[in-house]
Image (cartoon, rainbow, N blue to C red; front, side):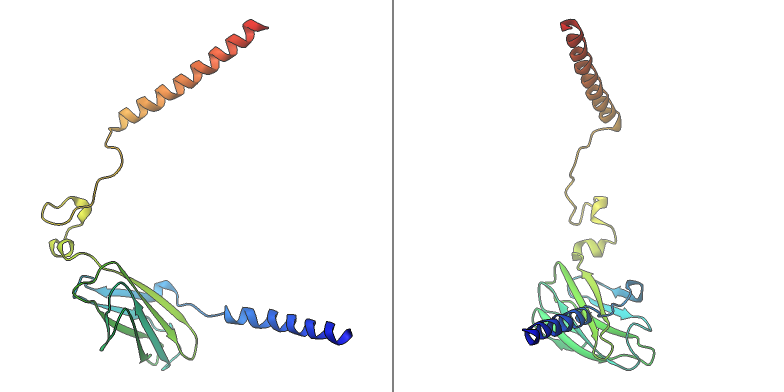
Length: 186
């Protein structure tokens, strides 16, 4: 009986020690990650991880996931693309992501240091070419490009305040009538 209790205790201690070590991956601070370039269909985006993001001269594995295949540095593959590159002496590394002509939606680049275990992620949101070429935002209502749908009310603020005032006045009248009715019964 004592042997079983000690075995269970040993397994419990091992689980308590081993489980948190798997969750101790260090993450690259978002301030160390920059995304530059044209995030349009067919464009190339460079994802930079600043000095200190990874250990000096370590191999960094990067993968890109998204709606369609991409070219990561020089390797072209399907929906998930992986590539390994060596970080600089300062721990900095950059990856070029070439988006396909039919790119849409969001792509995520995840880089992991193979020695340090540091993990960094960058999100690349593809902008429709019609919006990117005009140099204006779709929400500005450009007539030539794709415009965002208008949602919500287009009432003037005065109408909103009048409606809120009428609502408060109605609640006050109902409360007063209830109070008066209660007083008359008593």
